[in-house]
Image (cartoon, rainbow, N blue to C red; front, side):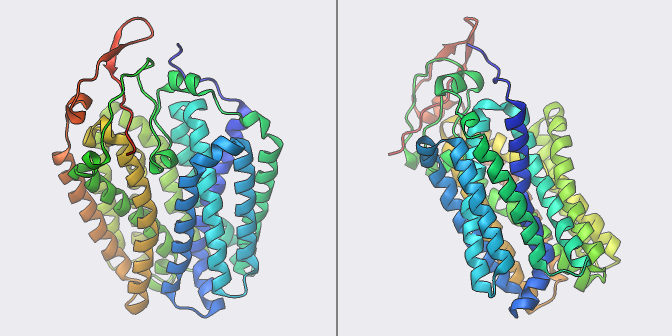
Length: 448
């Protein structure tokens, strides 16, 4: 059997990259547009929490359900329908007369985005290979970087914030049409071929739903069934879950509230501040492209530690009272340093909890990331509304330091034991493609 992923069609690969860019666009719009949205609706700063929470509920719901939907409607139809739903939701943003309608649009946007994210990850896991998987997530950062530029351009032209969402809604509609025209081309790679090609487990959405992983090693697995309670008893599982919530909280909070900090707190014009927020998200994109190569050479553990320390340094630069340039530098440092943290934490999950528990742990981590992305930025909005936007830097420092402590504690508590020891039963090695002995197979997780 082949041990390499099948070569993806160029047209589908291009669509996948564009889809991940489109996933990031709405996130980049909100931070720059919120001061204007807040003024139009006459709501306090912390009201953004309703938008974030609704979007997260929709995203988590569709991410979990997408695994079941894929088997019935196919990847192409799911992508087309979900992108169309996202376009309709953004159109609702642009015409919403009150905050409640915008919150409803956020729920629909979350439903569409979560299904697109899960559907593309499910397809890419078997068709695109690891390099493109990493770059797909990097292009999400590119989309978030473009979002502030779109909203800044709209506001600088004297137009209402609604036009920014209208532009992105139109782009999503074009993408939905492209997906609809290529529905047949998005046929899934056969399960046997995909498993042999890349030896992957479930996608993030599948893990969250508790689906069983595919055995790695390219052979027929001798499955090891691990009770759920055995996974939930591992301290490393919960430290990793909380680490994901903290990381995403820092990433989203910095991007969401940076515009308000730079305008109301540091005196920059809206146009300049919007460009600076875009630079923050752009540094996340560049960092993911560059540091993926660095991690291959230096090791994930070293890169993670340096990155976490860099996030704390960047947050400290934001917290120090001073010129706006210092805060902008801090934002760029945070973005570049944070870039590899999410993918590397995911990649090293099995090292922390053991291969027998990795898929369940990843599911918990992805769910916690969504919760952290909603609750912490919303809580910061309440704090800012009752104090000052200057508190943002100090809050980011506290979160970054907590993340460092949690990661180091989890690393020291990590099992470091082979799958057989963790599962409590031996796992025989499997013969490789050339008759060589490969490592232990990935266990099938018992969902009961």
